[in-house]
Length: 284
Image 1 (tube, rainbow, N blue to C red):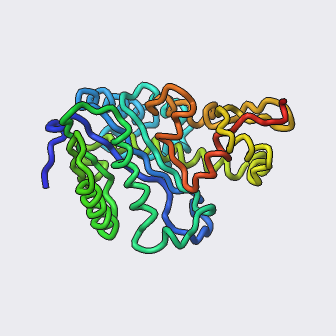
Image 2 (image 1 turned 180 degrees about the horizontal axis):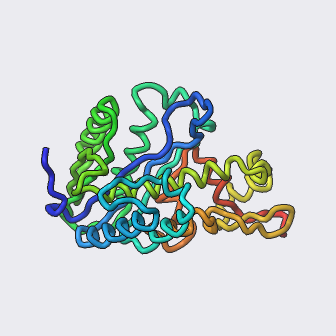
């Protein structure tokens, strides 16, 4: 089925990063992330130029596909990813920490992949979209065993509630000339997944994995999100100050730190308190 993106007011480009298995053998990922990049029709040309510049920096032919896995290993990778700050669009993302979830919930029939991609449809309700907007959701090609159930679930959700906008889902290859910006979604979700995987393996994170009573107390009291203090000293590292994410954070449609949780969702939810830190009670 041919679809012309120019017939829509917005195009949401969706891609995922990581594997959806739970074997955790060598080379397996411990996180699975999906990113949805919502772009106005008039901003598509601008973002295509950003993608062209990124490819030029890492020596990728303009017509070839560029993947995050290639850029992260390139000596000028940080420079290339830095151009993402100039992209025009709004980002939402879901990340699943596979070692922390109930694996039975996600195994079989590609449940993990499907549930993460559904984030794209759910996130639309959070945006301020004009009445009667037409939105095209372009998802990177997957196996037929994933595309069919995902499309069915999309249709079911659409039928449950009437919205003030209309949406259509298509599966397209990121090399398709009309859907090259799926490659931008790949860069975004790849960077986000790697960031959290690295934080999960940092020795310093061991301090937070137990969620000490003081941290839990702050979380239950709904304290304002801030970098956490370790042993009474201010902790500088946080998801909001990450070198890995500093190019990407401006794409989230947020005005305050607490709003980030609306567009960067984590499963299980407790991981929010591990990676977006609270104020430590020891300072008082």
